[in-house]
Amino acid sequence: MNHSVTNTTTSTSATAKVMGKERTTAGERAGIPPRRMDFEFSDDTTHYWYGNNAFLTTFWTTLSALFPEGETFFVDSVKNYRHIITNPTLKDQVSGFIGQEAMHCKEHETFNSMAEKQGLPTDKLDKELGVFFRLFRKYIPQKIQLALTVALEHYTAILAEQLLREDIHQEMFTDHEAKKLWMWHALEESEHKTVAYDVYETANGDYFTRVATMLIATIFFAGVVVSGHLRLLWADGSLFKWKENWKGLTFLWGWKGLFPRLAKQYFDFYRPSFHPNDHDTAQLLDDWREKMLQDGGLLADQIKNPALARAQNNIAAA
Ligand SMILES: [Fe+2]
Ligand SMILES: [Fe+2]
Image (tube, rainbow, N blue to C red; front, side):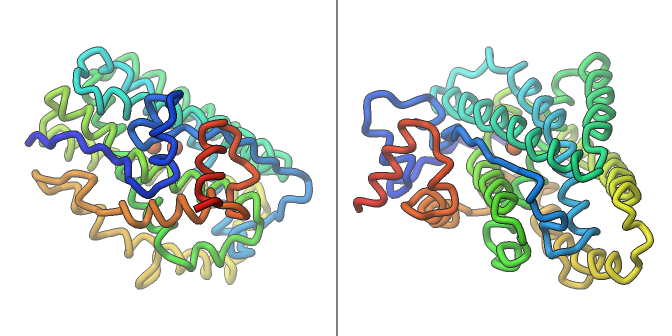
């Protein structure tokens, strides 16, 4: 089924305020502005920065370890189809998507270096995933590479929505810089959640390939994340902290835990008529853009793009 490409720009957002200016980038026009960040993690970064819990901190760090290679793969798989896109809005969205993911890679590499210094082998995990993706690029058809990106972008989108929507996550961050990184990444994952899907549809991607790839990706990446997580816990000397690990496990998988709460949104993907915009996050994103970019907001000291800095000033003046 073909969905029309949706312009995610909103009239009240910071991004929209930039649109009236002459020098806007393609991503800004599409409501997917790559924002230059420069997070700083030091020796002072709280060791257990999520919930003061080793299990949960190493869980998120495992995901972070997989982002640089993972998101580079996402970008490449979309770039393979750039030449067939004629819709100007989707062209702009693809530019924004590539810019945002590139910045995520850079900032998560900084974060991962901090984790390495704290004794967690994030580099190893990333390199191993890189070997897998190199083989995948070489031997698997580009259509399935794109379907894998669509599947994994669905994961990041629903996880991002939960981070933005549920206050519990804000309360769990015990390190301010880590909170900024993860909330910024969540915002942008949600902003560009339709892009890979719309490119897949433009490339006449079929339903069966989409859901079969999702099924295999779920099984494979569950294995990658669980094994990576166990290795980080081992490296941290926390593998046998039963009480703390049980607490973390319950937070993720218990009745009404993080993953069970995502189940409905995850299974929506298997509907033939599914589109990422079925999960309406427009207002949520507007609220968070304002919360993050306004004077004194979570990212106010981070915004490096001149255009976004202007937008930030517009919000402050409004
Ligand atoms: Fe990302
Ligand atoms: Fe993404």
